[in-house]
Length: 252
Image (tube, rainbow, N blue to C red; front, side):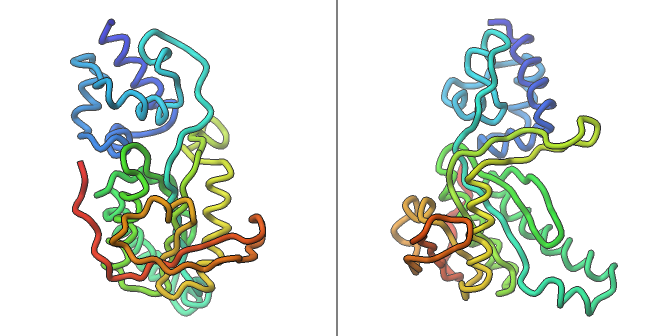
């Protein structure tokens, strides 16, 4: 196997996906230096990380090791999305500069907490953040990130929702201005669930049933069953996560 060619394929596909070396490292729970060494042809990814690496890059193992192949459609991940209750009313009482300072402070804290657990940040829109976790124990890491962020921010109006499923990662928009984004039913379900969480979950932290099935036993959950959430199948279940529960130490 030609390491220089392998490194070039990793680099080219990473750039095509509009991802940073740090994003790849976060998703795989490795260091950015490890990814840099791959791209420089100094060594090859360990076979244990190949399944997750090809999902992030949107290619097959064959493509990565031997050359161009058909990109894969999707990979499994845990979505973390956020919003701020009463954002419009609160920001209307503030200057534009103050709103930017306030929101940037929240996003900085949230992002730093999420990065500790290997989040790949995707975008910030108004009062919202969207990111994903993939690879080993991605759901548990996403929950730990959410618990950490809520404990630091201590703002009941700050809403975090987690959902797990298959996502598609790719560039959205005009080629000259596009940025990486994630799409698919999993993302849609996460945002639809968040709208219910924002109105009904006192702690401000809610997870879907797909996430709840992966939550460690020591984490307390409060179930809300047989819900009618617009856009979702009838009888949905959402779980409230009381804040104040300790997150596990950073993994990896």
